[in-house]
Length: 231
Ligand code: FE
Image (tube, rainbow, N blue to C red):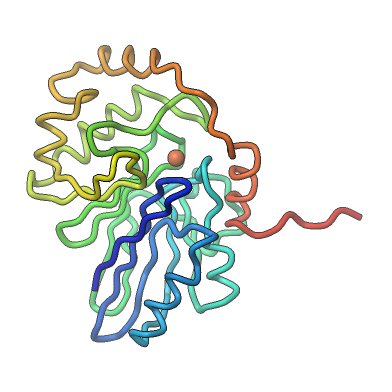
């Protein structure tokens, strides 16, 4: 079973994958405010949530990982490079996450943030903000690095079969899925661009700072749980 959710406020895309034999399920990039919608699908299909995974520490919304951990049997998983010490699992490149008969392979794709990951399940790639449809995540904060992003997109993601479906962490234009072949061919930041050209494009985007960054980044380092009380 596969389901995509969309959060209107932050344009975040969240994914639920379930193995219907064992009924074990995984969520990728859950949003704090949409937990009820996820749990409705989980419960009505008699699924057991085993993992809540993050592609990275988000700057634009608060993760639902902490809430899911307290309400369900889900374990939270974030890249070791994210500095999210409260996560149950510190993910690394090439780790394999199994649930029932299914498996997800972790691909480290730093550049948008130092701890950005992509997840490969069957012929579907969940790219977070590393590779977006016709774009890519910005590289100007949270340990971002345009050169690193170019290297992992062209050296890792673009070596997957062209038919591999690309499910990004966001889309602001109503698109929901792409494919590796399509992004290789027409992504304006990457198609036929050299590393130097890509770095130049990324250095000149002049994007405003995300509205929620000062709240969301510290909260997401704690997997979305409230700040501990002082004293
Ligand atoms: Fe992001």
